[in-house]
Length: 261
Length: 239
Image (cartoon, rainbow over all chains, first blue to last red; front, side):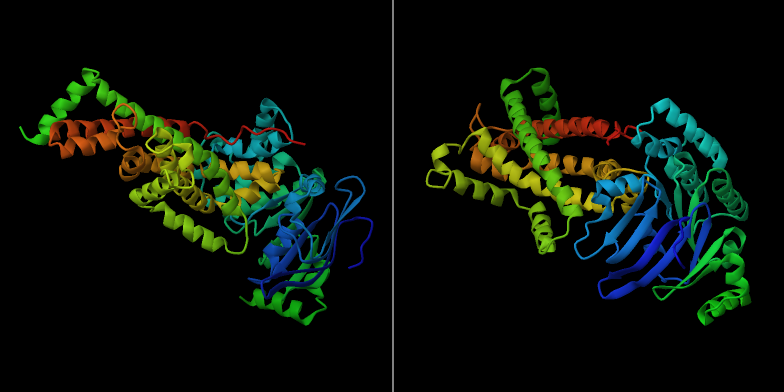
């Protein structure tokens, strides 16, 4: 897990506790640029917490996260006792605007589906007409353009997931975090999402970090796989190495156990 | 025809004849309640936002006090303001007792906890994910708070309507600190009590009907205002 010049994110000894519960004990992780990294883990392993910290929505208690070349130079966020929430930091705002997190249960603003997509573009100063045009294109790619002018609260769970994807496509963040992205999608939606992910990686130079418990999804889209277990990254490897020659016993059990189901 | 029927006819007559006493009472009710509502909203919503999103020791205690004050008996609020403003009270020298200002103060004591309490509940109940969603879409904390307020706008409207209803219909405080002085501090509710005591049930019922009618009209206007802002699209660029 050595940091190379092509790592977009490098996490060192990151810890997070909620009250007395240690959720993340000591996370070391590197995310290579222009690739898809899948973090596998069981329920309650701390996957969502890890993603929220990487996405600068929540502070860690200790450790560092370096974001290379997202904003000019290397930006390292160092967490310690006195760290304010990253949401309050202007420097973090610049970083945050280069990344986006798609939640497992996508939140929606009340308003039209279209206005849910234009919101982020208008925050960045884009004029209304241009924002709508780009948002419509993103909605078409995500396959829900026909719902653009309906109220967003009328969307089904799967459609809300597509809206979430459309928001990411419209903003084209350098870094995309996805929390259980296909949990509410039908097989067709899952295929569409996975194709879009590969398109974002190959044609839009985006880097994605996905947390999931779905081994099969990891096999389909991952370039790298990391296994999060009891608050630590137990193993991180390229996809083929991870699945064919897992070095850690726990990884072997997890991979084998899931396959037996 | 019973009292209620006669009261209804009398109400129509009072409204159409532009009865000066009735319109004065109506004007006083609206003036006092709207002032109290204005000041309560001005102080109450920022307080509500603060309480909804901040964490400090004793916060639950503060909230318990606020929730208790939401059910403040108007006559008790009136008594406290009376003692505060009476000639021997700490604010006695200001000479505010038996003025509209005194009634406004008493009604603020009733409306402020309602605004604070209901806005805290509304903001907490609004989809928490919206705040994080706004952040991850590139909003500042302030912009994300605005997005959350917009989601909670129905609860906020509910707070205003409830506070208005409480204030305009209360009689205990207005009677104690206003004194029901004709042409000076007589409101619809204090006039209604007076008419009932004097046995003029038809006039009392007429005043009651007018009170309900005014409440209805104000609520219609407030609801219209609340529905006006339903799009999230209007964001301003901040760097």
